Length: 583
Image (cartoon, rainbow, N blue to C red; front, side, top):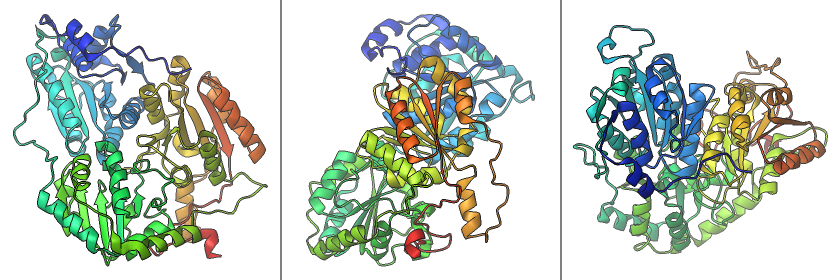
């Protein structure tokens, strides 16, 4: 049984019903405008400054709102919805503390280029700047972490502002846009004239079509390369360019590694895929980047978790950087061939020009050998439950076809390493900001966007406690997320760093006293299961899969398990700690 989502009505049907010009309040304009933008689900939490907006929702059957239990849950759910659907996620919160509770989620979306429209209420216009009750300068607070923000001063501007906000959020390098609506603006009435024309904004014209000369240079570089490598990132997913990427790899025969946010952009079973690069990447990916003579970055921004020591990254490679954001090109890594444009469009054009990397036959053989010699590995045990085994079990039982969301920490890396993704928008995780508390509510949004798909939320026992209150809305709305808790009774990644880098000085990482997660689930009306060994784990997971509604499954694993490989800070990415393989 899927999540309880009303039938999504066609935009044409809604347009006919709700586009009639008439005098209505700002709150009604907001709701109608969101429907006309194709929004079918909004996550939010009411409060004084948005009461007119929530009053307008009363009896408005076409408008779907999910009441979360915390504003952070609302924005993470909207984020997960956007990542899993490719549409703009929307959330609503009141002024002051309601708005500031969204800040972490806005920053999460901004770092990972996720399109959101964030709607906040504010105090009456006449009170702005007076330190009124529950007033906060949310546009000022969020200026560094939004693509754009609006403080609506006149109800007559509201319709056009909403239309612009969706355009900005979902074009160019995507990201969050904030609309702050004073309470009197939401109450005031005006003639509703829907904004439907294409948006043209002076100073905002993202380039989507690349310079043809640079594409020609890319094709020539491929012909000359002996050790070419592709580094594909989240931009491939966000642009919808996964099919074009597949064609590009097939035509050129170039091995490919996908970043944490790029997982799913290329099928993991392909012989040329080398896994994830960087701090916890594969031996093959890291060595291949370091020994390559041509590195083609496609929709990736050379994050420090990928590059390691910057001045030692890909030291022999000519760098090609394809990105829609010109500010990213050359920012971290000097670029030899810059190509600015939408990834999907760039690859469509490049696929007409490029040919096979004929000089790379020996390189492809080397890649194959490395993959065979040093895949991800761990020492399994029949005595204790290993987290890597748990993720492998999740992968095997779902054949890699689930949507997987994660929180942040060791479990996130094990999920990235051992779950094999075959399609885009199946992997939802906080990459740039690394936000604990993200995993579970983002799964709710992903499930709302995909009511007929299996959604698995993989969490640590630390991050799960940050937004566990959202279990309530899973129970109430029968949102059938399967919530996995990898419980090692500790802040695992912090413990790993304290062990390997801080000489076993374990400081404030013990999560003893955490709740009984089974009882916690049951308190919210959700089935809870626990497993401490392989037999129990397999049985509990199968029961979760057979249960039509939400289920929490706690897997109690070994406390001192580490994530390997690991590149220590300050090292180049070929200087890996291999764990068991080092022994």
